Length: 417
Image (tube, rainbow, N blue to C red; front, top):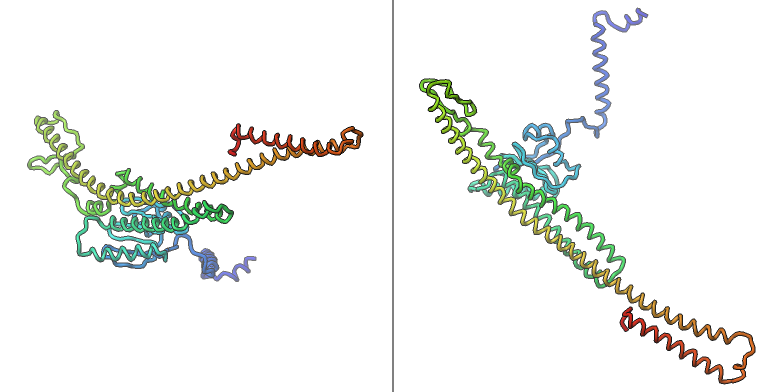
C-alpha cells in the first residue's frame, strides 16, 4: 500500500503542495463549470447602466455596481432598492448627507451637488428628463440662477412627473365622460363593463397622484428633511472652515492656550475670575448671534426649497382634485342608474299588483261558473234567461270589486292613477 502511494507522489514534491494543487484544480473546475452558463452572474458583482449628467450638461454612460454608488454617494442599500426597476415602490424623495434619492414614477435618479446619476432606460419620461436637463444646464451655463444644481434637477423631475400624471388624467377624462353619458342613457352589460374597467384605472391613477402629493406635503412639513436636501451649501461648508466653526473663547496674553466654549470657568482658579467670567459670557453671546445668523441663512434656504415644492404641490393637488371630481361624477352616474333601476322596479311592482287584483276577480268569476257547472237539479235551469242574468250580475260584481281595489290603491297612495 505504501509503495503504491510512493508511485503516485514524486519524491521532490511535498504532500501538502499536491493537496493544495488538488484544491485549486477543484475550485477552478467548479468555477469553469459555472462560467459555462452565460446567464449565471456572480453575486455582488452585477452592474447596471447609468446616465451621468454634470453641471455643464455633459452626458456620460457608465456601468456602475451598487457598492460603488453606495461609496460615492454615501447611501445605504435600502435607498438604492428604490431605484431598482425590478421592484415597484411608491413615489419617494429622500434627502441624505451627500445626495437626494428621487423615485418619481419612471424617473429614478440620484442627485448630488455636482451631478445627476440617472437610471438608464428607454422610457419616454427618462429620455425627456435627460434631454431637457442637458438643454437647461447648457442654456443657463452663462446665466446666473438663484437655484443650486440639485434643486434644478429636482425641479425638472417634479415638473415632468406632474405633467405626465396630468396628461394621463386628461386622457382618462376624454375616455370616461362619453362612456358615462352613454351608460346614463342606455343601461346595458357592455357599458357597465366599460365603466367598471375605467373605474379601476381611475383608482390606480388616484393612488399614484395621491402618493406624490403626500410626499411633497411630508417634505414641506419637515424642515429637517428640506435642510438635508441643500447639498451645495453643505459641500461649501465642508470644504472651508467658516469663522463660527472654530471660535476660540479667549486667548491669554503672551500664550497659545485656547479655552473651548464648553470649558467651565471658575472664579476661584485665579484672582482675575470676574474678567474671565465676563469674557466667557461675551463669547457665548457672540456664538449665539453667529448661530442665529447661520440658522436664519438656513431658514432662507429652506424657504427657497419650500417655495419650489409648494409650486408643484399646487399642480399635483389640482390634478388630484380633477380625479376626485371625476370619481364624484362616476358616483353621481351610479346614483342616477340606481334611481332609474328603482323606478323601473316600482313600475313592475305596480303592474304586478294590478295583475294580481285582476287575477283575483277572474278567479271569483270562474268560481261562479264552476258552481253552475255542477251536475245537479235546480229550478233556475227551467228559465232560459237565467243564464244570461247570472253572467251579467257576476261580471258586474267582479268589475265593481276590481274598481274598489283601484280606489283603495289610490287612497293608500301605492301608485298614482
